Amino acid sequence: MSQAATPASRHDANQQIDRSLYPQHLQRVLRLIERALEQSGHDRVLIHSGAASDYFLDDRQIPWHVNPHYAWLLPVHSQHCAVLIEPGQTPRLFLQQPVDFWHAPPQTPAAWWADHFELQTHADSYSWLDQVNDQAGLAVIGDDPMLAQRFQTAAINPARLLHGLHLGRTVKSDWEIGCLRQASAIAARAHSAVAEAFAAAVASNTVVSELDLHLVYQQAARQCETELPYDNIIGLNEHGAVLHFTDLQKQPPARLHSLLIDAGASATGYAADITRSYSASANDLHAQLILAVDELQQQLVAMATAGTDYRDLQLQAHRLIATALQDLDIVRLDVDAQLQQGITSAFFPHGLGHYLGLQVHDVCGLEDDHGEPIARPEGHPFLRLTRKLEAGNVLTIEPGIYIIDQLLQPLQAQQPSAFNSSAIDALRPCGGVRIEDDVLVTDAAPVNLTREAFAAHV
Ligand SMILES: [Mn+2]
Image (cartoon, rainbow, N blue to C red):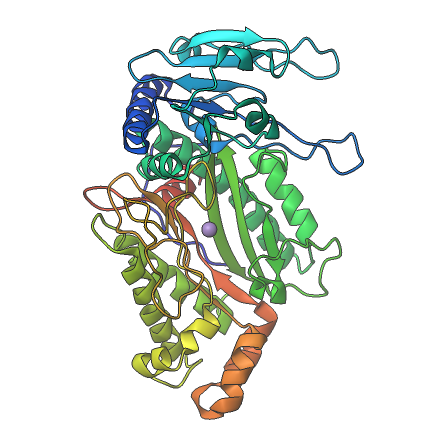
């Protein structure tokens, strides 16, 4: 089992997010939106929460997720609501409170957040739209098809304004950091429960299925599947090498070698995105690989400082992975030779991480401040973050090393002497290793929200 030591912290999953931080957050968001409006040349913006749609030929709804720009403004999210923002005015909130005996009504607005809006409730989904003039200076943000029908003069999702909103979301307020901490705390609690269940199966020489581990996770997180920010990736043994393995098996494998779990949680719309890897053996090569990835991951976290270009972190990750592969005698080439020949990309084919916030892969990771694309480094097609880091960014650091035969075998065939094939054969039944933490960039040292959460839980 591998679980790295972590610093102590004050935060735990039962702690409420500090509501006194919300008014300042909202004022900041409104300022950012006003600035974005100035730059896009619009007078005001209507941000719609969204509306669920049904499955094809069915009366069952597709799970609904709020428009993240609406969630940026408000801590409580329901369908058919909207905020109208006009610089210098109190934002107007059109809140749907339907008369409906089929469904539970949305929460009654609580003073601590609702008092910051001019509130107007409506019973049906669209009548309130008549109160918003369809004018050239209006921008509308949302994806309900009714919006485009109703607003023919206004700009629907104008790119320039969207960029301004996305850019604003890259730096988190204290309120948002509180939400992200809470999400990490819930996820850490659930990860720990799964680690215990896996360890218990190993210790008692029994087996456990991926689905059972998923159910342990959900019970400990106390979140429904629709609340989880993404489908849990829970891979036993060789499934750990499938980067997005969500096909959770109900049957346990004959023997447990390893577990890779990539699972998050949400808090007030904000996500945690955490991966841990465990070995069933105390000291086999896979267990050593977990320790090596854990160590290099923490080195990379420490480098996530303001001013650092995330592309350099990606390249640095490949150097550290090459070092680990050489040190563990998996690859018999030095770092430079491994990089030149693309060997680390076969063991670590994905990006080092991404912004995290209201979306798991949060917005604006590949754009500069003016909305122009920032190219990925050559040979790194899956990197999701190419910006320079700044204080207030929250992002993931998630290096991994996997045995993916599709990628490795062509290289092994080309140059057999570069690889220790018996080491690769020994690792294959264990799939792979990934360690992922959620990290807050500050003006000083980075804050590891995930390790703080694990430390507070234990
Ligand atoms: Mn991630």
